[in-house]
Image 1 (tube, helix red, strand yellow):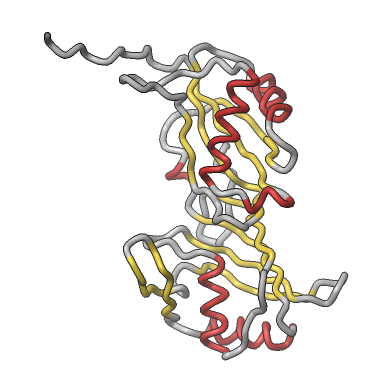
Image 2 (image 1 turned 90 degrees about the horizontal axis):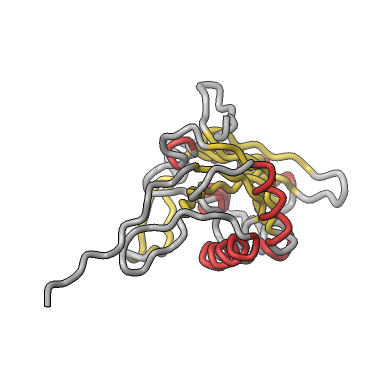
Length: 237
């Protein structure tokens, strides 16, 4: 008996782009955890999703630039494809209600087309570290003055060495008024291989010999296109 072709789905009627936040304890959720929670929320909210073709169709959701597990974020993005045209503000309200507190939808807009991932060129991070402020300042100065700082990280392909300095557009430190802890302001270009905020912390330890402390609180504040002045724009504009 000839094999039947899988059923083909019609093309999407509309695409929406979302910005969402990972806050509080939900910063420890992995990308897989979030994707499962989001698909459940889409189902509960009865969003008219478009589905992929094939024998196992799934809702058409495109994730882009997810933050590392353990990091909080105010600037996570994804795109959904819909089977019918809807009002973006209505989808915003439905999804924000369906997701658990700490996974918060901040903005929903209609997609202008093109690749969302290509718009996410850089990120800005706030990193709170437990090290003594003067030591952090010295480490930042040594790092910024370096032409290259090689760090190692275990990846799916094994232990890799790469330059953490080349991806850093800007790095500075201040002292938090509340508790006197050190706060790093980091602008990080999305490179290949990807350099993460914890790689920069490892590099600061390498150049200074001073540990940045345990359990730093890392929060992505912005993510999007970057101009010649190092300013990150809104990828949804």
